[in-house]
Image (cartoon, rainbow, N blue to C red):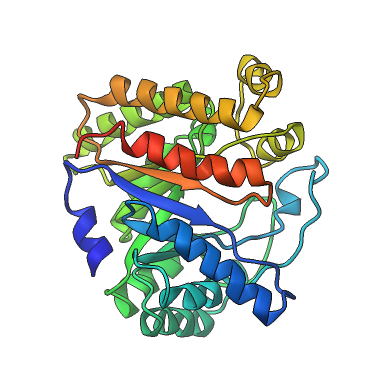
Length: 307
């Protein structure tokens, strides 16, 4: 598997490009058109993988009202299947296992392999306040390791969560259960990420294990509404950064500059650590300036890194 091989190259920074599936009730013709546009965009980039998110409502994660209405989307695996024939890069999907039974999860894993998906980022409930029957995240990872060894298993890492809890413990536990990589939430406060990476490297050193690859996620923000939604998702955006973006003549372009600066700052701060890094650029907005900004951001970050 190409992505699994790439993960083993500890010296190379890997690049991912992430998208959300179209809404569930989209017409077939428009679905095929959306998949073709994404494929053209992705095939013009130097990528180690294209990520399809599994969109969840997450209404119980916070008491704050959702800035954008939730619209059910096509299941991540199904959309990846639409992309398989046209996208040259390996396909990676997110999958929320909340509410799934063991049988459903095993069937999903079997189908993923048949559809040519190379990796799956497994996520659980968005909040501990949510109660839902089904398998636990721990059990889901155990099953995936046993029933789908051909898939590279991944998880999520949230620097903001490290303020309140020990995110390193989560990473170590998930790695023990088979996770080979982690993809972060979008980063707009680099100090939180630097702290987490340093603590993670230290924690790995203390128990004598090699750190897993961490993909740092960056996403353009071109409007106050997008910024509000990012904050609703739990992304910490300093007030000075928010003002800089929103008062710029071209907010989306300014946010690209901010993301590039943040990546450089993180890279310089952790260059001596033994953590293999990756970059994940999100293109999840319907706004033209933010969609275009995601492509520009990928190219800018790619050309910052050594070949």
